[in-house]
Image (cartoon, rainbow, N blue to C red; front, side, top):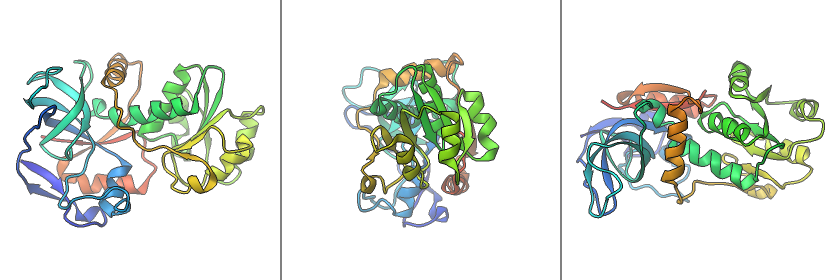
Length: 301
């Protein structure tokens, strides 16, 4: 099968197309004929070697942690899905490939296309996990730093669905986008504390940092302490006494299926930019540069 692999750590240019063996499912796994692979910032950090000390990678490796596609083979003991089912979920093997193995998948609604389906697993789990950690409830004000990406797109909508008000930061070109999702938008950078205080004179109840670009000190100032601040992107969080939240192994197919149903019904908006599998290096270069609106996706076929 065709796959994107890297045999050494480095920039996006270490990614290249190769023919590798089709993986065989172990007990509890399904094999999926991949139609779309989600691209996440984590992919680039693993490829660069940045996370090698805490998340070792065996080389050569296929990137990618989420997929949408058609079940092609079943491992022993699998009964929740059948061959031919259309699914979305998390991949056990790299998803930048024609075939990948998965343990946790949900059925894809017929009204949801592949590209928008694959925008949900990682971003949806991350957004809900952090909103739960923050304890966001109706009537509260949540500040989200760098909210125009894949996770932020869902987090804004999920928080407003809880009845919270969201103040979200992004660059000038994404102000209208955030407003369309239901947020009160403002730009990041110098003067942020004053801008947020003008928008929320009574303060913010919680802070969700998706940017990892030096916003934690301002967040502490706005919160008057470190409570109810969570980052998924700033590795200096613990030095400041702030919670850094990483991916959870407790992935819910029930919640993923519910998000997929909402997306298919138009109740949850996803925004995608798609590249063919062969252009994975270009897509990762765009991801590494930041400022992505919504989700980057690789189409496989």
